[in-house]
Length: 264
Length: 261
Image (cartoon, rainbow over all chains, first blue to last red):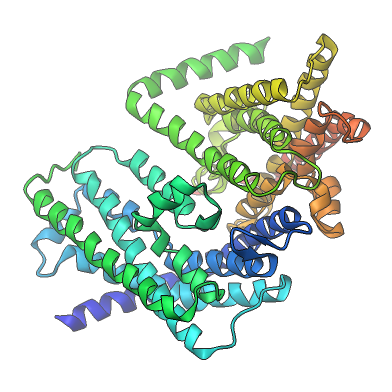
């Protein structure tokens, strides 16, 4: 059984590899995005030393690492699931002897492996050459970051699956998918680190899963989280991973009883 | 006159197809605006930590953003050729367009109009009015005329650049990925040019003139930016860019040979 799931990862990886040319321009686009934020933040810092706990140097590293982390964890599973529900092919998936949710997770993982090797890694190298990015030298931090990145991939994928499954309940979940994208980009800390938000929004974000996607891993990696607090940060990600499994299971149970295929 | 009649016919057709899916219409409008909101939120959050950005205050930056949204909304209403290569060249739909008397670019653009984008322009205008009042700017009738001229110039820049890039599909059949690339460069045009290094400044002013769709023309109305004359260049730059775009298109269309069966 497990080998079937492993095979799904491999196939998705190979499919992505066939279309790798499309991702070369992706690297440039992400670099451009890093560029616009880099220059803007440089101007914002001007002469000021620290803003919201970030020095200008830390900010540069934070932006580069956060965008390139996004290059890794980003996927369109929500759209894939919604399309399969809408065109009815999900019905075929139901009768196959595997779990649809795990299948999607594995396909996401295959895409993630591809993105890590051919998108995030070269992208980060280019960003380091173009901008004064200072990566940590402590190997322990690299290992922790790799683990946290894997967790942010899982949490982001869970959020995508929840959004995708909502297509079982509303006929057109296009709006939900777009709204999710805006919220994840805004509250995960890619666009602005969460510590820059006004107080009430920081408090709100402590109770939301999005910070676990970008803000926490990038904060640890840029060395903004003191050593004794890292364990707590790791725990936050685990808690969200478990907590987000509950709505997925619930949605999945409900969904099977009300599959309604449009057209076909 | 002939072209005006065509515009109204195309719009009627558009309305008929869209009214079938009314809910989608609002979903599209709101998610469009949400995307713009993230940029605005960025500006607001940033100015909670700094009084000025390269000499620009928060209200001034929002004013610039408001201006930026107006030509952008008009442009996205009339220009949706992001899948031109697949739809018109690979599938050969260009054949149908070319058998008709009206100009090919005009037809292709009107077949893909998206009027909901204009709501973004209205929000932009609203932002300009609100921040303009905060800044104590007064708009004389002459200013209004200049504003109109600048907006037309900015829209022409968008059209010129993207028409030129779309014309590449006539010369090369492989998807180039250059469109999304330029699309992302465009967001550089909202911030003061002085924050960038020399290379990007030259690029944005004279090569891909996105400085003229945001910061430069908006600076005309803000006191003490010393860019008045530069701003008045916007219509000229717009006209030149547009002419380059349309020329590349016209040459490209001649090379079109049709595809498929």
